[in-house]
Image (cartoon, rainbow, N blue to C red):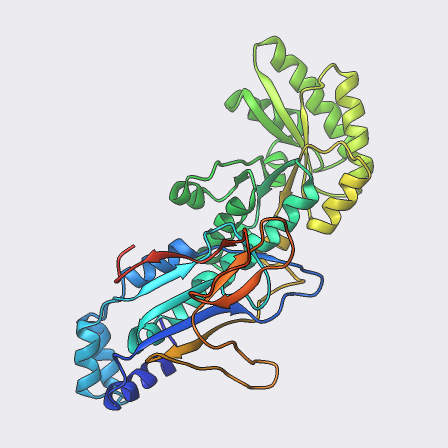
Length: 382
């Protein structure tokens, strides 16, 4: 998994005698999405795994040979290549902003160059998802949050990175069963409108579901008429309570969520069900959630899907992986709008608040500031 130019540069480095020159690359975001003030670091574990798995097997090498672009010298080097360098990075979950290196890779030039595409791929989406999720966590002000993004994410791997990024940022659960298995994220889910439609009426659907899940089920109440659905859910909940079970929540997935949540809360309270929570979903993002929270809408949990997995306000980040030092020589890029800072770096976070300070690695930081870049891989080993 790499861009072609990583390999063509590797061929040239090898023939110019530069392949083993020590080099450092910095990964950073040039600018944030409009209205965003920060991102949240994520994807480091995937980077470590990917670099640890750097291998070219015989099938890979046969394919590269058939392109006609690479000589036997590079193919032999790739047959033996392993990542032997180091990775310094902000721990996952660290807020950062534009211009700050979130990760630096140091090692032989050929290896560190080959790392570019996979490192960007692993960190970009994960940090974007974690940053979006953190904004949603802030807006929710302590209310529960469930990741519903899987079905609208751009592929299975994207869905996994979004689920993990949201978990790192403070979400409580995910509907993505594979993410739950792989990362240990708590699972949460309700039912689909198709489930309700599959039965002859709404009440029958609710009764069937609580027979299968009598302890804490969430009932989707907006398939036909939301207030009527809440009343049917309340009757089912009261009958279930008499049998020793409980309905955990009702879910609203359409309409005016502020007004409908107030009606739902009133119906549930009048039925003696103050412990049944209200879950809301349907086109939510941090802005919609902030408005609902500011209005004191009685919503306990928000499910966030499309605008977390494919946020329209930030479909991509201007994230870059740039050479900053080679063979002991600091280097910089002066391109208009894309200038870089030379040398390996450290990011310092002042203890009392205020902006971070980006410094040359080894340069003393401000008094009482703490360093954000820590070594996670040394000599190729995590």
